[in-house]
Image (cartoon, rainbow, N blue to C red):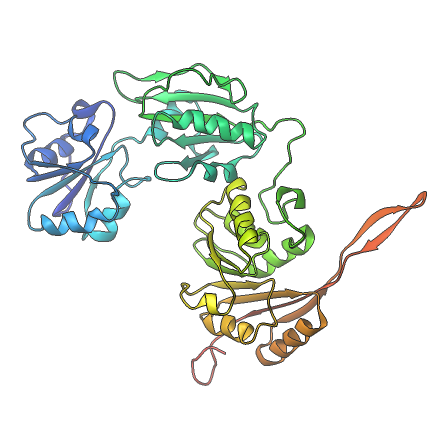
Length: 419
């Protein structure tokens, strides 16, 4: 049966695999042959035969800023853009969909589909982490004992970097295989090894590869769960750390949701922002910390715990808040007595935004009581005690109680403005 043509579009995005021209559909061949402009990576363009006679343009670096410029330069011409595998799965299709009017997409099986088929792994049970144009540290957030991961590699050096990160994060026993040139004539899968046994001296393999990881945590390695309330030992800190049980309650009040942005004021060790980001890959966070040494410590914690995308602003609030994008939620963990800080944070929230503030001092508690009177919400006191030795017995040691105010900004029923 002949392929059904898609809707008319000035831009067609064609997925192509390691099998090149012979692996694309008839509809894709027609689009590539008819195109006046062909845009793609050098490797992808070299897979096309001479009958694809359009002007060939190699993506510049950095790629993303070049998309609107190239589309504008060739407006009115038939453009075909080449993408690896499925263009809408960590591919150029997303950028084109944001810039072009309804591009016509002709997908090819992705490397992930090929990999799960070769490994016999159900796709719905696998987590995919891309390291293309992203720091290797982000893989750390996906490490859980027993989980299967597919890591999209940036180049031939990525498998070695993955093995090194696994060893460093306490997952050296994890099993690794590297799948190269999937779907092509030079397809190869390496023998299974562990991160601990990775052959450091071996030359790198093919740059077109995907890394399959079966996570195994080493004996004695710190266990990190998937919900807020990581062990305090997971953080490097100087004492300025929202402790585990208070942290879990605080994240519960902040209620992160996919895609939302948090302002973490008075970052300390960055634990609130870090665990906000770990709740979903699309969450975003900015932490504001006036002490340079602590800001550097926050960066190390974020990197180690798999959220290197945490934005760190070194400066004092509220002055440091003026250039930040509007938040969906704000946490104030320090500096509450700074003049105007609480009001500035509340004013920055959109309707529906949440604010949570913690304190252990009477002076700051008075400010939170006043905010509670003005804006409502919940004012609670959180107390935690730990069992400790008392001579030959065991007793309770009470930590300083934490006063927490949490509130959600809602529209004023009379004016429609937010309260």
